[in-house]
Image (cartoon, rainbow, N blue to C red; front, side, top):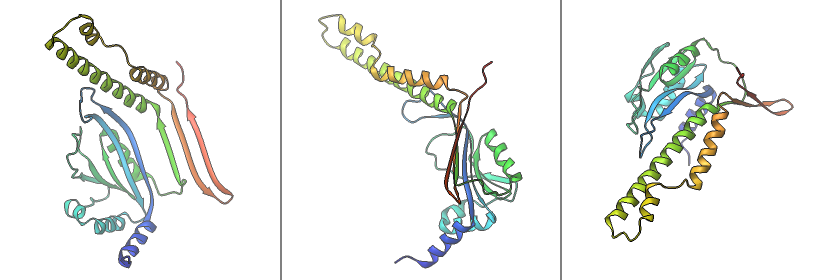
Length: 228
């Protein structure tokens, strides 16, 4: 019941694919966003690696003719703008590039430098997966969530105050309560999370997993910032 030609193309694509990676260098969100988060700064590189990247791109184009009609894989060492649906406003354009044996999608100055550096990296078997996490980014995301929560609570307090002043007031206590809202349990918990992550800025967690002759090898390490 499955088209054998599609299976054959998928098998060839998997055989040609040597690896994939995602490196997020910078992400900063605007604190004044109300509904959808607005990105203020963004730098990342996503890449797929192959011994024959042009052939891999050809197979991807066959699987998505719409993409092939909109953009062509550039020459080695070059990049082109990648058409991205306007889901949210980004600070820079998303680029598609070819660097050596790596097809990349990137944005930002740091992303462009990192993508270009891949041209000097030959393919090598370096494990089933590797993961690196910088707690500074988590701290920024938590702080953004805290700011959004505080803005929402202030907006709710303002609405309650307006509703109270518009109705018949029998006591001044409700108006005072609405104008100076107390800190909720959710705000206290968010504050504790932000404080904890702020204290862990500079900490990097590294994990990896690979299949070996004797079984499965899982490794982990943590980098701690040096105290001045």
